[in-house]
Image 1 (spheres, protein in one colour):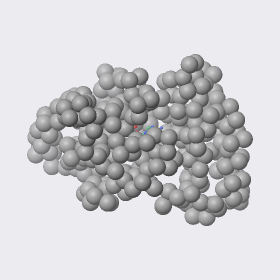
Image 2: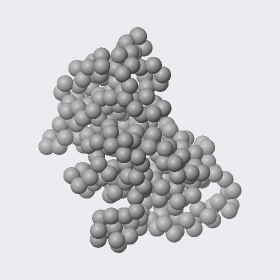
Image 3: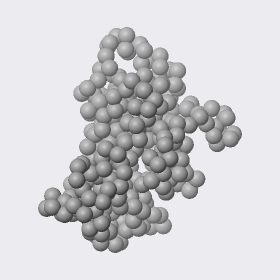
Length: 287
Ligand code: AMP
């Protein structure tokens, strides 16, 4: 496994390996602090491709001014060991200055990919203006840098997955986007790099998010399809959390629905108090 920081070096190395292996390239974009959720994506990519690239990059353009960009966990050494064990070919771990040019650092602006307003300015995008523009831009850059055939994303970030699939269709990227199931702890807490911010009490409170989701799924399976009732049930379980949104959308359109008929998703974002910070967590479940 090679750990590479520079775009041109990665391009060269991929070209070299591709001429030897003649296969497909699978890309797993991450921000590092890798856990078993990331590893499930990496393992799937390893099974399905001859060459596997994992990018580890905390992307500044997807963080708002008051978000946790500076304190986001950075654990490249441990991440690299996990990747090596998982049989990854290349870890691409650039510095911001390897990805964005001087203009960006001077003016805080770069060329962006901006999906339609109504798609990005709801759910997570509502409280994180510009977030999905930053995500699409870095993902498109990684597609161009790696020339991957397939890219792997977790369903944990369901809106992100939906938006990237749309970007790929809208811009005709010749890349297959593969959505992977949410990996959870034994007690159902969805794995997240931000779980490292949680103290013991906060971790217990955070469990109410998955409790709410699984309760709603149970009710739905028992024939309760009215979204207002389902949302109220979830909110009642999450009284100790600062809920940012609880919504039920159609899987196909990501638009709000009133009644669960076809495939639907319940999505939650909530903040948990942990010491002095309010840790923002997201999770969702298919109904
Ligand atoms: P991140 O490092 O948080 O940007 O995540 C990188 C990728 O891993 C994204 O596609 C996430 O959706 C995915 N991911 C993060 N947590 C999980 C999880 N618990 N289960 C499955 N995929 C995940």
